[in-house]
Image (tube, rainbow, N blue to C red; front, side, top):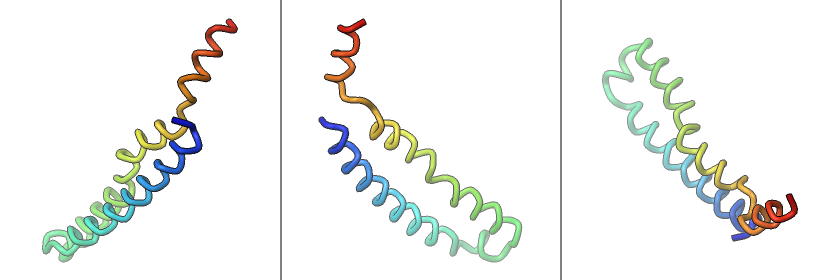
Length: 78
């Protein structure tokens, strides 16, 4: 798979991840425990706001990986 195709697929996956993450986070934010308490609300929004990064890291890593064919050619030159 070419890096161009990987980046295209990865961009679509990241967009889908962020949209789903935001919708789920908004739905969970309506829970009485989070909605009624300021400290719990702040903690929740910090965790929910930064939490999407962890599932996104493998996608970004996969997107930026070099082609396997190019890696084989580089090893033969050494």
